[in-house]
Length: 416
Ligand SMILES: [Zn+2]
Image 1: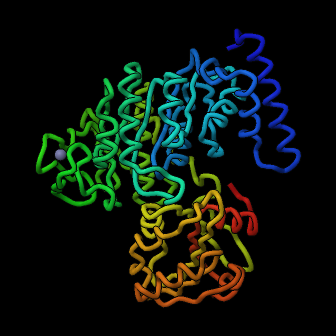
Image 2: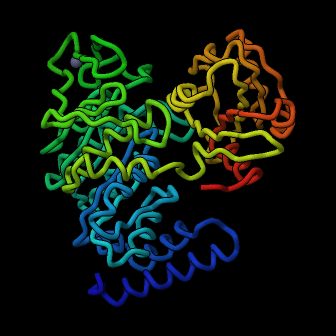
């Protein structure tokens, strides 16, 4: 990578300087501005920086930051790994991640679903991990069926890339099925509201079994669940050779993280890291960009859970303290959250009945209306601090969407 053309070297150096200045100015980690300047000077910089590396791209609606972290941790025995650990998951962030680890032979890059075709074309990544697709911020995210169609075209044009895909998600399966080689992971699918119809013909999908390892097939055409190579069963992962590995060592809670871990094991196996070596390294990941972190405030232990879309809310509900543990919810509608929060009506909040519930954030009135419709008792507060001080000392689960989460994290401690 030291054989970059002079212009590219200059682009990397200036990008790094800009990133450093951005950090000094307190404007985040600088990876976006650094990458933007680098790409402006050399539009082919991502391709050049990716050359001669073993790269994995990780994409999904939910879980891509966490899974990227898990894979990166499990790949440490192979040597230095370049990664966009702070979630800057567009080409600017990728340039920055690769430029700041010039000698790393391996790279694991979280990739925004919409940018995946472009990043795949530019990097020629060796491995592409695809986990789930579901409705997201309504005013910003594209229609997910169209997105899966773009994945199909991109993978067809990238026969060098091996795909690791969740075959429990029919839309992901369809998106991945044009790839030349695929490892199928039965990683489970909790949120099913976006996959009742066949992506191939629009017919109804029939399912057998529960939320994990359940078979599905189209009633009208040939489209059906492929035979899985890796299978998640409760807290066990069964590898292609039939060996079973317990996920009890995971530090991250909940079924969504067991699913992320199953995908991570399949990805690192592709790079030659065996599950028995990878598992203890997965356990070393305890929090991801503040998610699942517990912060202390005035005797209260706040556990911070990020939830950006309907499927994410189900993941958060899955890891709540047992009822009647109190829960504070905070929903904003700024740029990164999406301004349209109509998706609140897609979430089944009845699971919160019987708990003390606090509602905060810019869209607390929207959330309150939704909870009222679901017959969930709650208290609305102007400021999350009122909720924190109203609960007795002890545990409080806090579920928030993106900017609400960042505000709470900044206020009560940026422990990562
Ligand atoms: Zn069909």
